[in-house]
Image (tube, rainbow, N blue to C red; front, side, top):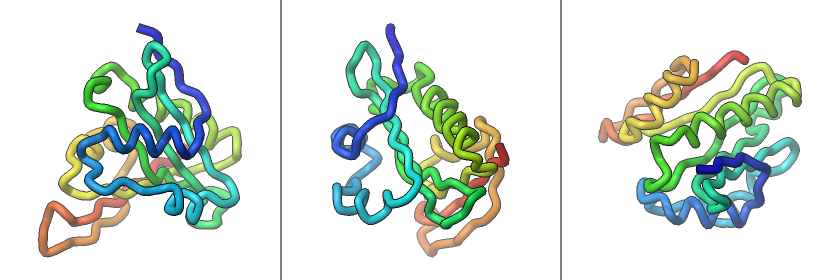
Length: 145
């Protein structure tokens, strides 16, 4: 099995996100264009040259030190082979090369795999916003690089 992580394009991220069942209403091209100004990064993971996962981040906070990991995922048939970790390693390497010292992301309480992913990859919870529906409560993570 050949795994490759490379820089990607908006359309690739959209195509992959539409194949991830947890995303009931994934972002469209306009959503990307509104956010991806200034510094941004789109990574795509390929398995045997087939698009299998993606990760997108941008300078949400207009900060020289904090980069935001906005959106990403791995298609179900390609999970548990290390794609998320491979994307994260490349993402962190890029952030360091760009002189960012922290990465932040937000997830919903219902996305248990993302919570585990964050903790497994050295993120700490720095905030929590409770919702009446606990599955929709927001958990905010940060990692110092």
